[in-house]
Amino acid sequence: MLKRWLTSFAWARHGLATAWREEHNFRIEAMVAVFVVVAALVLRFSFAELALVIIAVVMVLSGEIVNTAIEDLCDKVEPRQDKTIGKVKDLMAAYVLLTSLGAAILGSLVLAHHLISLT
Image 1 (cartoon, one colour):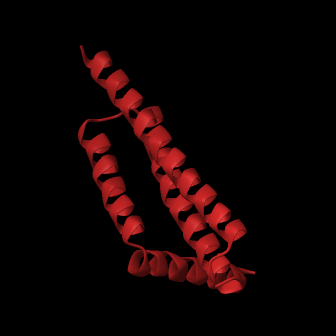
Image 2 (image 1 turned 45 degrees about the vertical axis):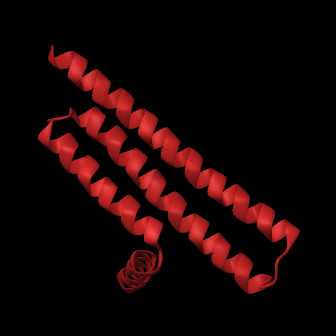
């Protein structure tokens, strides 16, 4: 059982490395995520505030990975231009956009709450 878990972890690590190596947006989002989490620690966010920030960051990064996986699968299934595949890709891009906007709004609200509570 432990061997199976370690193997699964290795594949997941490989997936993260692939996302980092092949996806420009993932690298940007990951660097922003590190900055945001470090800023939250420097600003001494509460446990709950930090948890919300981390959840938002993980949602954005996960969304980018899912988007990439589905886009790659679509390209494999139908390498030519296709209306349905285009729709799927557009919907996935919208998913990542909404997740990113939601994370930015959540982060702004948490930051505002934190700064207000300091006064």
